Image 1 (cartoon, helix red, strand yellow):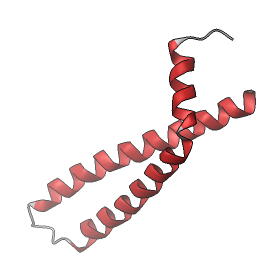
Image 2 (cartoon, rainbow, N blue to C red):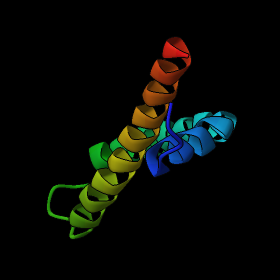
Image 3 (cartoon, one colour):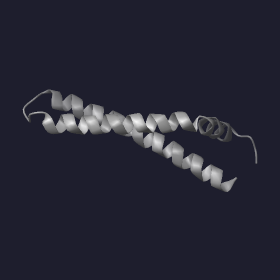
Image 4 (cartoon, one colour):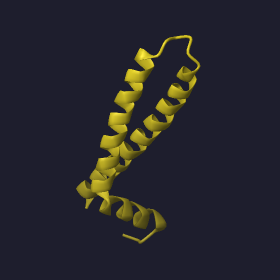
Length: 79
């Protein structure tokens, strides 16, 4: 297998798998807290927009961490 930039990148990410798992757990807790805050927030409050924006950002981080773990799992299975 050639040592391309992509291979080196994913090898580095997979070396730090435990940190990515920790990040995924933190993101999951933050998503639950944001959902709770969205549910408890009155509809007319202006902070709802900020909460939705936070939800989108944290959700993107969660999906990114989950994708990295999935990709590392696939690389481990093919090796």
